Amino acid sequence: MAAIIRRDGVRSFVLFTVGGMGLALPLDSVLEILRPPSLVPIPLGPPSLEGLARRRGAVLPVIGLRRVLGLAGAGAGEGGAGDGETKAARLLILRHNGQPVGLLVDRVSGLSTVDEGRIADSATAPDPSIDADLLAGAILAGDGAAGDGALILDPGPLIERQFADLGRGPAGSADFSAAPQPKTVAAVSQDEEQLVVLTVAEQEFALPVAAVQEVVPVPETVIRVPRARPHLLGMMTLRDGLLPLVGLRELFGLDAALDATADRGRGKVAVLRTAEGLVGVAVEMCGKSCAFPANGSTRCRR
Image 1: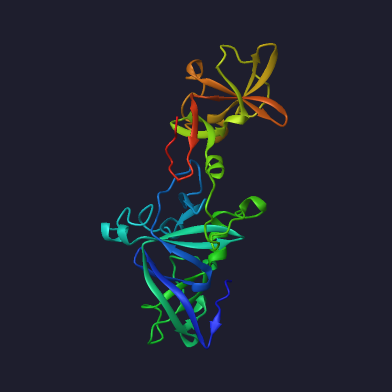
Image 2 (image 1 turned 30 degrees about the vertical axis):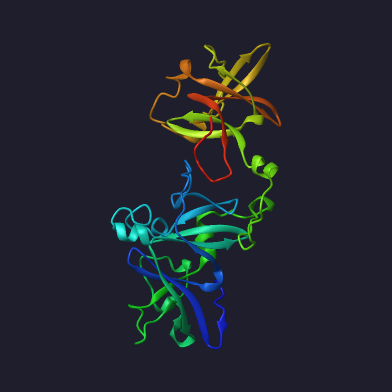
């Protein structure tokens, strides 16, 4: 359960609403409160993941509390929330295991200091719409009832349930508390990464250019491998050698109802360099390399 820091008999909270429900987070767990930035949707991501946002040169996942709590609408201001709520939506930046995470809420009511006498255990103010494991307590209204108060979310379990491995390991470390440093021209140029865009079932994926040796047409003949997993389509010939061919559509379970081999004749194979050797990945289209700029734009500079 999240520690709610006490100061002189009172506790500080950020108060907000999601779907008309009053909620709170301990002020010490909130790094920043922002207007929602542009989000990049992630195919096959967790249902609660609204997308990725860029902030001070770092990328952070954004969780939609409407999705987590099972409320109407896929995000703040959608599916039942008015335009006023859309404009009032805010992003609360938290840190989980050293990794910044954004929580998308409908509206921030403000900051509040609450006397300890108004803080109750979550079990005393149950809400059937919220799992008790996600709560750290409840702020009671002045008359001792919870109706006009707020439920206090426990950010640890809330985030852990969505991304069990978020922030574990050196790659997940990021710090938003430090002031942004000016970048040299060389550093800005390094922020552009060349990627090869692959299209599978109308979804786009990307790989670093350095990982792709070449792109060739799907061969007319593929040697099947007995008892292989569905995503291993078989072996294909590449000049004087054999190359294992993996179907990205089958691997990700995209459009399973369709015949996965129907479009193979007009597809492409991206030949990838891996630690085990070369591997062919069958896709529907393989676009030109892209440079994703440092300004956070999601548009590809082809």
